[in-house]
Length: 444
Image (cartoon, rainbow, N blue to C red; front, side, top):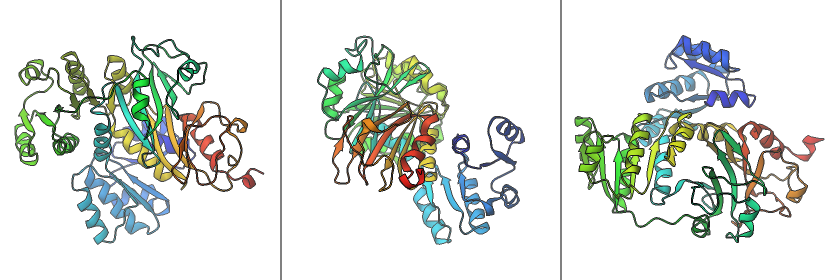
């Protein structure tokens, strides 16, 4: 995924993969160079041209290979920037060890922490698929389905705007089946649409009920399927909040280790996808069920089962991106993706210095991009209505250097130092980014 995005954005990319068949597939489908071999071998990285490269992204599924690749790259080139994905719970210890050896990693991506953060933001709010934060949390973006009984179904967005929504809120994106829509006022919301709504940190609790959602009751009982690192992290955070947690793990030995780590949670050595097991554990009426195993199919099945048994909130961890819209159509409203978490962090690092954050949606179809306006940007100092952004983009929010937040209208003016949150189709991102960050002199 990372290679495809970087290649499409005009970068020269070399992919190292242990499988020769996979290398041939990548070369036939992407504009990249491939090298077959282990990224943990010096000769492989030399054949890949590590010493002449600007950046190494070590994002295999094996931490040891990622660390070794960065170590080799450090010896081969002192100027090469290094990004590593680490999934171990000892990520901070590894940073210290590498720094002590003189190996400085420019970025460490720990997707489990990002996923745990996303889960904790939505676990207590029924009907909300995710809550994303921009500008240090001052701007919020939440996802929701337009249900058959929703007052939004059949309404044009300009009608919704006339219904008196809280100030500084906006429907920014609409996902309709396989279609992605950056909407305008005449767009009609339909039953089954999955929409994303911009709000501020201060008004999100007023925007939720306006959109037909209610804030959840206090969390009391949460069930977790899967005793991998994400499941343990979330269980620990819920324990700290005083929530009663029951965690299902099939492997007996791992169940014992988890029970020694957690202080109050009940660890059940059983198959949490079995209806009889869930009934015996009294899952009915629980506040949330979090399916966090490494098996996408198990997570989807268990989430659907829990929802049918009356759980208020279900969240499924999904690795395969093509399963994300499928899960939504099946009724699993809230999903989290470690793969997208890695892509977002890597793209933010690779792109220009004024890119503050990157958030990718579904199968990389759309993106939220947080950019800082420079003094010489061609978009500074003019009303938005006079600016010609690529069709399929939307200015969702502007955050001033003093912290003031607005969801802008046509007379709003972007000023130097503003953080501007854009929503755009993925194919338009390179054009949008280069145009926004380009100076007026460069244009001439």
